[in-house]
Image (cartoon, rainbow, N blue to C red):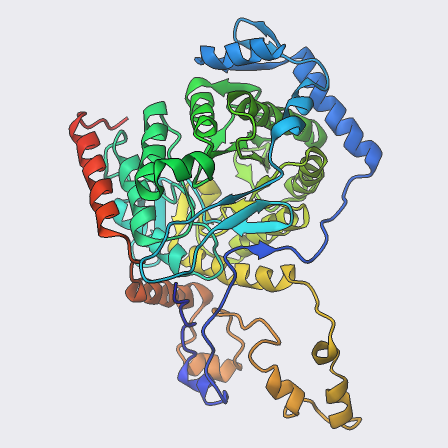
Length: 517
């Protein structure tokens, strides 16, 4: 992939620059060089885990509409009463720790004419950013809020491919509501394959759609490769509190059966789908996620899987979800320690906000959602860019603003380097006391890499900003995303594979009538 150059600065700013920005080179995933934050003391961590075990033993979890899942639990020694499954303390933890991979590689597709592979590691000290997921609406400054279309979906896949700060193409970046529900998964998976070479996610909304997603990967990578390597993720939400519906558990098992990774995510708003008290909601989320992770190992021991979490607060006056608040921040930090205790890869949310547009509320809530995910040790951060209105909207301007922030997080996660250059003794020798360092040899040698050069932040004087049009951040962001789309080119795809994918899609579509529900 040829990394895009940053958008040129306004002419008023270029006058003060001795050189243009270099092309951005970014890794295919991050390797954490800073420690995670130990928010809980050992006794608090022990008590949360014990509470989760008690929930599983006394209350249990229901598996509705999936008799095969119930049979797996019965054979594993759990107590099955109708659709309710209860577990002896330690049982679920033992299943997880016996065969669950601590880390795994998800592969991106090959590009004709390029040796670069966009494989990402998930788990351990690796960090992977992916765009937001699941929004039925999109927003941009020109057209406003509207239902998402397949064109919008393709646009976000293309921009994700162009961004050096996103490592993963994500999944249902927005819902293409102009395509029938029973067929749109084919177009979405194909868009990820056609317009990007980064790893991606598949469908989970029906068992046959999950199977179609995996089969398209077999066409793309080869059946033998898919059986031995992870090439697709499936985002599996529990129906909190304490329920797996059959659609989700069957999708989870289909991905695991194919040696692909389910991302098991309790979706809990405190006071609605879980207790209003944060500690109780954390214990519930831990219990639900553990059960889902363990089920993948019953389906296929050693299958890759991600322990996920989506736990947020809500306005108890209106029932609306809230983001960027202190309670979900504490929850992420605690969940991070619980995942590390289990030894499993962790998924958390990223740049979350309830704001309707890319304003100061969006900036604050997104930053205060992303920080605890990073400090808590999240390995796969979904919703890292574009999220608006509690996940109902995927925002074009918000997307590129978030990407710029993710670039800053790349710099932060790299930590400090200590060597002769960074300790700068040569600069101290060159610059006399009381003099400035701007023109010294050390500054010039590190000119392009010393500080993160924010793509969309305006650091000009008031007069320069005024003379350039007094453009606010969302207007600058609009110019950026339009430039990204204008410069996008598809990474080369083997024509025979492309033809086979299109043939598979056409046959599938022709085999069924359109369904809009």
